[in-house]
Image (cartoon, rainbow, N blue to C red; front, side, top):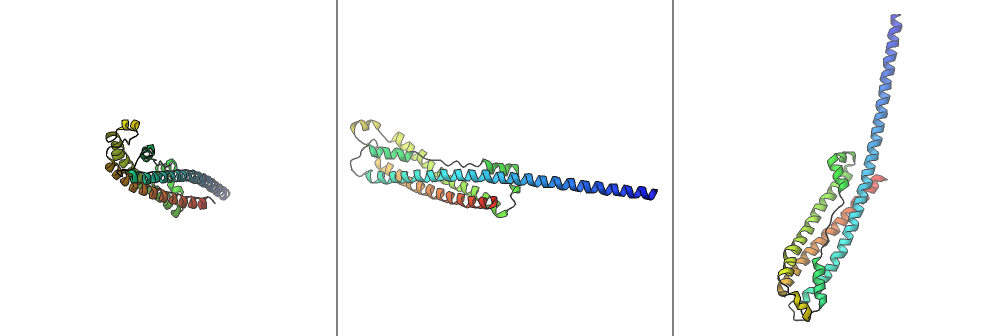
Length: 217
């Protein structure tokens, strides 16, 4: 009788252990499936963010090209003795306008702050994501340098070195044309830097989108 009881107890223990193992495996599979779904959603959102950034950068490059053309029109006229018209002032105010770049980085920040970046096990993809957003920091540095020239020099010049009453007489409002020419020439450099940084940013977008597409396939 004792032997029978012992066998029964052992069988019950084995059944319980098997049941726990099955439940644990099922929970683990469910957890893995949940993590995989979350990772997929992160990658989809990240791709959408980067595609939007690429569109913004492309528009910025188009705007920069227009401003480079405006600079090319301005420089030959200033301090040249040539007759000027309203187009000069329009070109100057075209240069005064500037485009910022505000990356859509909420998904990336969520990945970092939540610790969910660990869900992306592909080391190459993870590195590409981190490198891409590091590239954005360098890109924005170029934008900040350009804005500094606009605000500290051109904006200040247009307030303190222009007589807009002269426009009514058909004259140029700019009082110190040599100074304005030097400012515009300085802006040419920052426009070129800003354009180069934007192009590198677009290339970085393309690289990351390609890697995300491969991970989603």
